[in-house]
Structure formats: C-alpha cells, structure tokens
Image (cartoon, rainbow, N blue to C red; front, side, top):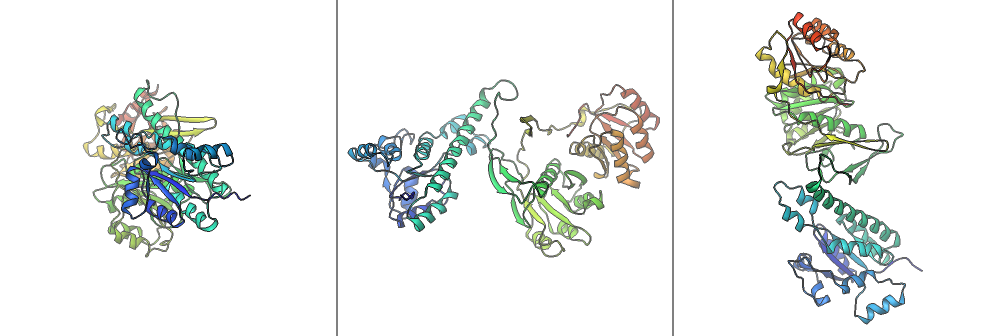
Length: 523
C-alpha cells in the first residue's frame, strides 16, 4: 500500500506570512480546500484565494481578542483522527468533521518581541501562543496521516510532492514532525527562559538551555578530516558573523569564521575609526585613527609579514580610499568584516587585486547594538558560562604606582594598549605606539617569553612604545627587557607579591607604571 497521503483539506494559521500566498495558490491548484483564521484568512482572501472560515466551520466565533480561535473539537478531531481506525473515521463522520491532511502553523513571535528594547512584560505575555503549539503537536503526533509545516522553508517541498506524487510521503511527514516538535520546544524554551530570568536569584539560572539552528554545513572544520557546521542563536540580536550578509567571495571556512569573529570583537570595542588584523585568532595588527583608511594602514603595518592571508575587521563603512589601500600590490586578504561597504569599494575589492574573486566581504550592520553579555564555552561533559569581558575600564580607577609620572601624551597609547591586551591569548603582552599595535606576544607559558616575542616583533619601533600586560608581572626581569627595548610606559593589573620589586625596577629605569586592578586573561 502506498505511503502517500493525498491532501484534500488543509488548515492554515500563521504569524509569519512569508511565502504563504504561493503555498496557498499551489494548494488550491491541486484542489485542496483551505480552512483559515483571522489575519491569515484576510491575507489569503486579499490575495484572491478562496478560503473557508474556521469560525463558520466550527460554528463558534473567535473570542477574547483572538485568544480562542482553533481550540475546538471539530478542528482537533479532524487532525488527530487515525485513518487506519474505522471507529475514528466513523466518529468524525457522525459529527460531520472533516479530516485535515495538512496543517500549516507557525507561532507568535515571542522571542523577537522579548528581545525588543523597551518591550513591556504585558506585550511579551500576549505573544505566548496557545492554540498554535497545540495544533502543531497534534498534527506532528498523527504524522502517519497528517503533514505539519511550521516554516516557509518547507512549503516548496510540500507543493513539489503534491504535483509529483499527489500527496505527501511518509518520509516527508516524519521529517516535518521532527522539525515541528523542535519548533515548539524552542518556542517553549524561549518563554521559560524569559520568565525564569524574572524570577531567578543569583547571577546565573539553575538550568541553562542552548537552542541553536543549523544554518549551513561547512566544507570541513579546523582541518580537512573534521566535519563542521554553523549554527545560529536567534536570541543574539547583536551584529554578528552568523547573521551577516556575505557580499562576495568563496564560502567561509570554520577558521575564517573564528578569525572574523575575533576581528569584529576588537573593532567594535573602539569609538574612533578602528581596524584589526587577525591571524590564527590573535591580532597581529590593530589601530585607531581619525579616518578608517589611516586606521587600516596602521593596523596592516603592525606585522606586515603575518598580515599576509589575514582577515580584517573594521568598525566603519569601508569606503573607496580604504579599498584602494587594500588593493596595493603585495597584499592578500582572506576576508573583511565591517558594518557596511560602499558600492565603489566592493567594485574595487572584487575586480582589481589578484585575489578579487576569493575575498569574502561580510556586512554585519550597525555595531551600536548591545553585544552578548555572556560568554559560553563547551568542555567535555558540560559548558562553562561567564560574564563576557566587556566591562569598560575607566582610567579614573587606574593608579600610577611609580615615582615617575605618566606624560599626558602617553595616555592615548596606554588606553589603546590596555583595550588590545584583553583580546590576546594569555600570557599576553602588547606594545602600542601612536594608537597602533606594533608588537604582540601571545599564548606563551612564560610572561617573559611573551615580552621578548612582542619586542622582537616590534623591532626598532619598540623605542617610545607603551607595554600592556594582561596580568601582573611576577618578577622584574620583564621590566628590564622592556627598558632595554625603549618602552616608555607600562600598564598592568598589579597584585603580585613582588609588586614592590617590579615598581622599583620601573623607578630605576624611570618608566612610569599604571596599575588597573583588573586582569584580562583569555585562555
């Protein structure tokens, strides 16, 4: 016996109307009778599609401002009746109930409403759907006989099967049922998280659920033998790589996404035009300036050798002057992320350089929205959760601990270096000069090794630079190395048992040192 179920009657009640007219037109062309409610019915009728009013069918009007529409035995019996049970078929026939072969429902936009700035609690509560989830679950339960669509992305396959085989196949119905229960689970989770956020005591909830949806499968992971996929978190409303628009270039890789995310994170931390250059998830260059092109120039000069094949993040629209700079001979850029791109810049970047067809241009939109306040990291057996390291560091809380004071003209570089060091893997040391990153020592087991690597990267440019350290110096040996390199100021958290020795070393070399009282470990 064929597993294809013909579609004679469909119930449609959706919040998201995208693709709805095409679906309904396809159903009507296949001879399907459509039953619908409220706004969905009006939308279809305005599109010239014949629809049966659910209220007329049930003999019961919508009431309570639309809170009660489909909650009726004539609806749910028509969905839940098993076609392989004679008693079920006799029962619905006795009560003049039509069996529904297709249910199309998506739910009130609770998550989108709850994430809107300034939304009231009452508005959120009104977006808790009651009838919708019940319809979805009923249809998904009776998947042997009923197809359930919960997303516009599913409509085309349903119409294709109606046209090719005259109904829906069991494979499709099972797939749709699984997606339907995932849809309602995600929806309920959003509501629970919202309500729990109002009632929990302490900083983190007792239980935490992560709801992600696969956006795409990647070519491979960090290495070719590893499979990989990209999942989206719809609760994150900040500018991000997952929701970004790719304007041009090859498919993004796993490593591209990691590096672009790091580049964007650095650039968004500055108010002035800023650019960051990332290689292997660490900055090899970064700068701020009065114009974006000057910021990019300073960032690319930080470590030109490492910048080859890097990704770049910017906090301003990429203009023609910046594109001209990036098209200079000898440069190779894997990807660029920015709020936006001028059309002339896109045209130049995708036509002039040798890498023109390959560069990925990622448009993320405005960066002034609030970024996530929580950082999550999976480990074997669970997940670590912490406050994101976004707390602004006011210089009013800083303390100059040396006899040698800080020259006023050094404060911009000191502030820049302290902002940058939070983005470098610990042990982290950065050298800054003219609000540009000129040397980085990242991820070393010894802090003195990080100091020596940063100085080596900076070369002669270290003379007159500012040094920032993500954590305290346990010994004064790093101060001696910095002094020999020409460092003119140091900023660090402080807090070592040997702080007095470190301060004494700075005084010996007449290098001012600033304590912040806060560290920036990044493991």
